Image (cartoon, rainbow, N blue to C red):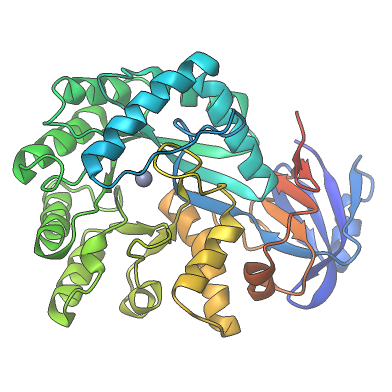
Length: 400
Ligand SMILES: [Zn+2]
């Protein structure tokens, strides 16, 4: 753990010093230098750069990225079955070229260099892959411990019921490194909501892991899934341990359904996650803020078989969220930033980094005046600190 004096950082419009010790901010302002007087420490001169909390990627697929490898050309695809088949085929091809641990690690280093402090990684678990992807991401997490906090979701990308053997693999993953068990479209992909939920909730209870669903089902089916998951969550006492990603049921929901889903989600302590992808539905985060529903933000797939887009840069994701929802006031841009920084931290059970005394020293130095400007400018961080240690400079990850 390094002891560090950060001088002349811009916080809330004023220049101030920060004293960092044992991974935390221990003093600010005039007290900072005094606090470290007599203690051996390094000094980092921010030269007026803006200090901002680092960000949390609440939903990313690091295992099947081709990041750092050769370019993949994609053919036109339209159905979910085509995408899922192409995904499995590309993963088997890329596995020959490079391992999951090297590709996942490469993307994670990039994300850290752009200001990511933590991520929840959805990792494919399916008969064609067995537990290889989970093992690869567990290894990458171990390599990068101290630079980023990683939670792993065992994710049944190909469905559970439609791919026999998946349920057993999910249970094995939950017993060997995965922190969460995932699910996917219980109706749309698996065609039997109750059996799908029985398996996912059963594994969660048996192995003491949380639950994180992908829900792309829209309309009445999607709403039914949200309500059924919330009801089970409460019934089984799993409040605070369940997350729902995408939740396209919110797209075009009538006011009554919108309110019903919100009440169910709040009562069950569920967090929603949106990813603000191209043409797909994005959660109405400003309406959900007003309704008191917690929403976090993720970057989803990055340069994998599903899409060449994505880069796991969370400041860009906050930008895309604000852009998609067409907001422009500082207050709304700040909210997009807060979702990426604080809501994700809360979802992962991490202490928030708000640059206060006692907060974890997880922050970055960037060009600009304040967070709303950063959401627009998407600056490459001049320095990224994790637990008080400088882990990246000028967009380059620093090996420990
Ligand atoms: Zn996903």
